[in-house]
Length: 239
Image (cartoon, rainbow, N blue to C red; front, side, top):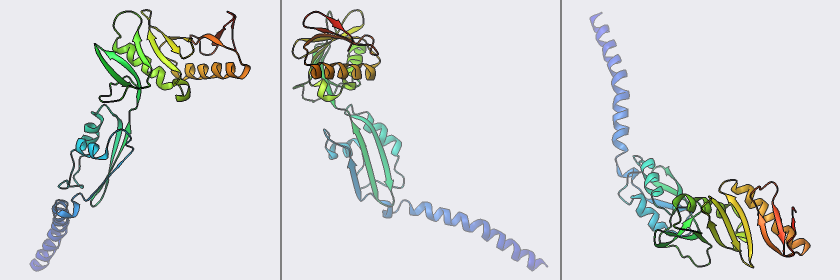
């Protein structure tokens, strides 16, 4: 009987010890060259180079893919003003896929006394070319950060074919904006907000004017559900 008890104890010990040993062995294996980084794929870049993204991510040939902290890499990438969002995927044993969504230049603006280029959320994009971009400025005094952001968001909502006609987005002391389009057309944009509705209303009015062959001098988007247009004759209508 004593021998049976010893046998059962040995079996129980083996049942407990074996999983622990297996887990320990697996944990040790995750630190072997099997999980060394071999392939890095960067997707979604346009302005940035893949090498710049990899450098910002801080990974390289010695990186262990199994123990990769994807959250910290995402944070590091999104600290770059050019990166709106990022995802990092591990493909064991040795591959990583980084996908970035870049910010794009939307306008030029003064930040203090420095001429800069900003994205559609108002973030300054260092090194971006300002050629051909509309200007965001204050009609009086210095442009505030909030006004710059609101103007950039308004421009970002406008379809590119229409935005190409915008020469300036002017912030007024009242908090409203005035948009200058090529050809002497002025758009009373109103306060920031309702960007999508106002963008749709602007496009609709411009399309109507082109369809009926009339020349506009002003468009009022203050109430985007009922935009008005002023003709060269001085008549104001609601298309």
